[in-house]
Image (tube, rainbow, N blue to C red):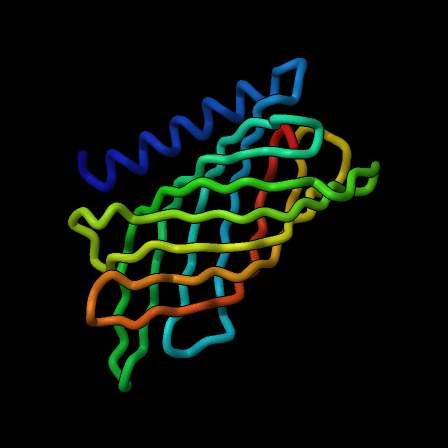
Length: 172
């Protein structure tokens, strides 16, 4: 399956999940669409567009499966380069504040780009805090976090980056 076909499949599953969550009576299924990036660094700047599809195990504890499309911008020794990758991961979280104004959750996760014909091979570990604003089924969300990229080739070293995320959440 080519990269374009994978992106279409991921996008189709995401939109199908949004429709399912939007019309559901119970809020067991959750879907989140985010874009996240790091702008404070010159040597390596990652930008991701991600879709999380998950399940609310309890009223506060949840797990998500994540698919993301990544653009990694490098500037090493004056040479600029970029790589695109698709990565898959899983995360688990706990909603520690629930009220009418917002829900705030903390989560940890890990993922990998499967190292198959990818420009830059890596896996990642991250921790983040997200705020889902409002009471409706579709909520804007913002987040901050830190991600460690564990490089799997000798061209690039390991990186740790702080990131900011914005997006929409359904069923959170």
